[in-house]
Length: 111
Length: 125
Image (tube, rainbow over all chains, first blue to last red; front, side, top):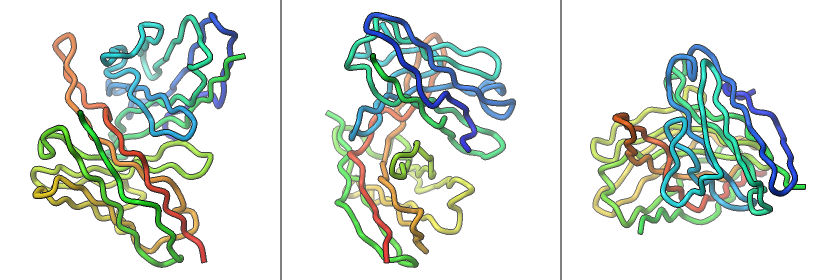
């Protein structure tokens, strides 16, 4: 059981918008710790997608956006493309565990 | 360009130990923490801990305390993760990941920005 909860799967048609939620608690996201998002294509290492809740590293398309409110965070992907089909993970810090924690991951299927 | 190159796949018997290396290049090795993350087959990411390559200080996830040891050799810009008393459920791909400093809007963050290619460790009798 992951400390951060994500839906196991989401799907959308090309061009559509999808969102992936990441729900935490008062010891992690709710305590003000930042959330980062990673994209993992099949058979590859994760790639940083969003850092500090809503910031995109250089090279990440602006179709990807992040937000955080209360004990949750969200990743939104607009203009869905076939190449977006991947697993997505949120990550934060947990004060009770004194370490980083990941969400269980969400598999995005582009229909 | 930044690269993290890990050692090759390992097959170990239950009860044995494994040591995975992660050689960094393209940046100042001692300037950024190195984290270790593992991923069991078909499962999600699991954070194991970090090492400060500058001081050698470490912080391990509670789950792995007593079984994991993270070290580094600054002369060759390489970090190591050793896991002992291996069990079958330790079968996973082990990644090293550096945490760079990113600043935006007056705040700075330390996400895992560069990852190694992963090392598959198989524990089987």
